[in-house]
Amino acid sequence: MASFLSQVSASLGLTSITLLSLVGSAQAFSFVSEVEGSSAKGDIFLKAVVLETGERVVVEDLSFISGATIVSNDEFSGGNTGAASADKGDEATTGISQEDANAAEIVTNLTTANLNNIVDTEDSGSFQIDLDFARAIDNLLIWERGKNSDLGVQALDDNGNLIGNFFKVSRDLWTDAGFSIDTTEIGNAQAVGSFGLNIAQDLGVSGPVSRIRFSSESGFNGPDWKFVGTAAERESQSVPEPGLLLGLGLLSTFLVSKRSRLA
Image 1: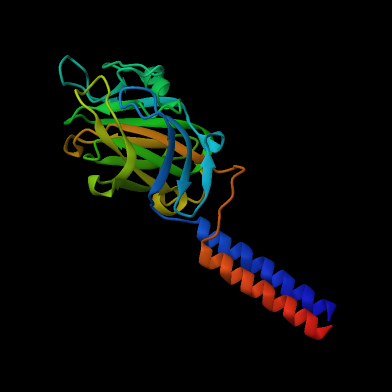
Image 2: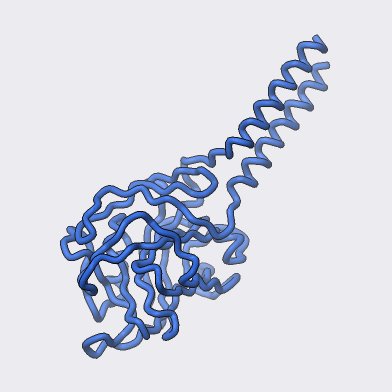
């Protein structure tokens, strides 16, 4: 009898783990941004994100950019020339605004939790920029000012070689992030869109990565972007869907009842 109950308990444990794993392994997804600050010109600090799986990831478990390599970036020669540049809210207290941005200046805007520190791209600009994350990530979270541009994404290995799949985040995929920003590059506030990618499933790699190449082409309509990753090793846990919790509860009740009858 004890052996039977042990086997059932083990099966329940394995079932729970399997179900939780299925819940936690999402493909391209939308997410909720929890922010502090509402002024489109000022600071809008990210506090946490809630993934479609129900997992709430606080800022301490997010991975920010720690380094950048500019593979290519259209040259800035005045006006609306060039491609990727550093930009920030008119009244933001962090970040910089720099048209002819170098790698360190791009990192300055991407290493903060202030979603009003971004990288702006001119409408017809092209770039390829490799970004290093401070901690290996399993999901990539993207914000785009305007919700009207495309963005290319592909993972890199530790040696800087492209791996997995190229993923084009097309402009029709953005969902409303719930806030707007007004930066030095524009004259009025624009709504921000967001979109999430699962590193393994969407980028076609075997596990978490620490480097990703981001790119834009002339037809991408100049994405204005901010990136953060969810650290692959983090404290927050996936929260099962209500239906899954109910199912596990019924299974647990069945086992207790079964054990009482066998006793």
